[in-house]
Image (tube, rainbow, N blue to C red; front, side):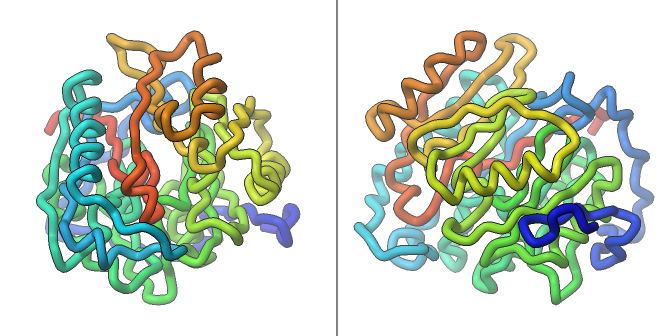
Length: 322
């Protein structure tokens, strides 16, 4: 586990130990699908394949009660709802995904940010233990909807572990896990134990909420990264930890580096990225990706409460029969 441990760490699944439990003890889990068939996993060739998306409606309580790292203007709920509906409409209408939409829960003001409640790779779903105690119950609805897809379910039951999905970057080859205020070493170890086929490395995150607050995958071998000193330092750590050489796409704005890459059979390379009216200079960088179908998405309101594009969906590639 020692490569450059002060800067980051490599986790071996064999040494990670337990801490996760298989859900539905009365049901035998189906065998893992062959890696060649998987999407959002399954090796680089299938990276970005997706059939389903889980999203959740916005509760009105988000405006005043959602967690936020800095004080600022109040969320305009009507505008936030319009932006979210357009986001969901792109996934369902333009890209043809089967969208499973959970209802809002007013007692869970952050519940629209479904990414933090689960990490799904191939046919396995890890239900997380979010770092903010007020968000732990968000996992219950996520568990029900993922069970309906007959995924292999693993629950994070270790009370010493915390993990937000926003700290998990899957590249198609390996996982990077941000160690942040919301995710700790034990959470990263349980993820490594859950997805044993992939290397897992940890990356310190100090000045942002999550690892994916300033980076994401913009293609099968392409990391979108912000220009801040903290973002560039994290990228350097990832490069040092990995045995693979990734291409990078540097954008001026950290928030704009959070984008969604999909590989849709009828569309090819698809990238959802922040709108030009929000981040014009970063949008110009994305426009250089001539092989991608580019879809600008506004996220002005949810950004006020630390929301990013990846936060609002859990993407799944379902290859076996339901």
